Image (cartoon, rainbow, N blue to C red; front, side, top):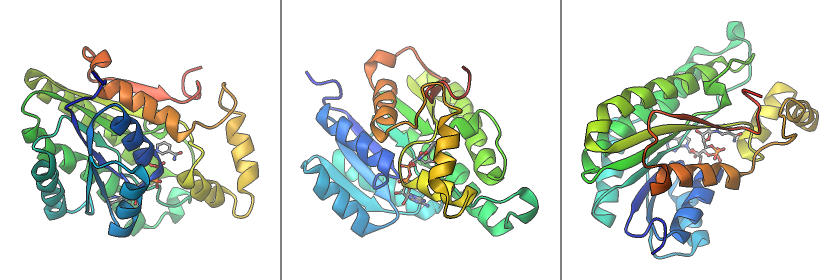
Length: 253
Ligand SMILES: NC(=O)c1ccc[n+]([C@@H]2O[C@H](COP(=O)([O-])OP(=O)(O)OC[C@H]3O[C@@H](n4cnc5c(N)ncnc54)[C@H](O)[C@@H]3O)[C@@H](O)[C@H]2O)c1
């Protein structure tokens, strides 16, 4: 029997880089996968690329309550239940010192990264009738500070608060809740941040950041997805309330 046979996984940010790679591994492990992201076209393309009949999707903005209710109901309609919730959609905001950080962008980052994660859990948990696993994508930015990304740092620290609160509330129902904390990942979001830190000199920023990572490089999408797979499956059955850095030693080494 495959590792996630008979399991249903709901992934937000499912058309994004980490979400897509995780969907691929979950499908290979036998799960049915429901993807949520902002744009129907991106979801359709992702579902096509995954090339598996056990995929369904719904376009929804995770920061809007009615949209959250809708995507949860559609997931249950499609596959009958939810066992795994990869609560992963997130945005980076902009790179600016706090004095220059636009309040409307702070509000947007909070709406997606905090409110969206919290509301997702609020509406998914009632459907985890046989227990389950919730994995929240925080970041190394949820464990330590760094300059000029204050909204992102704030939101990713809040993810740890949500995770711990839910882990305590949901444990009696055999629902585990954990967070993953990626270092920079070699993907779109980092290209955007690198360019924000030094417009036109992203490669230099990357080199500098890599020199702060003991294993000497960014993570791959696959390396984050593998950690999510561990937390999603039965091998982590006694782990809840944990913050798992997937960071090449960046935070604690
Ligand atoms: N890329 C990195 O270096 C890195 C490092 C640490 C943590 N993370 C976190 O990993 C998660 C996934 O990011 P990624 O690297 O795959 O980047 P990504 O930008 O490729 O994926 C994020 C996805 O979330 C979707 N999204 C954004 N706002 C949304 C909303 N309101 N409703 C629904 N979907 C929305 C985007 O459309 C996108 O597809 C994010 O939470 C991010 O903060 C990324």
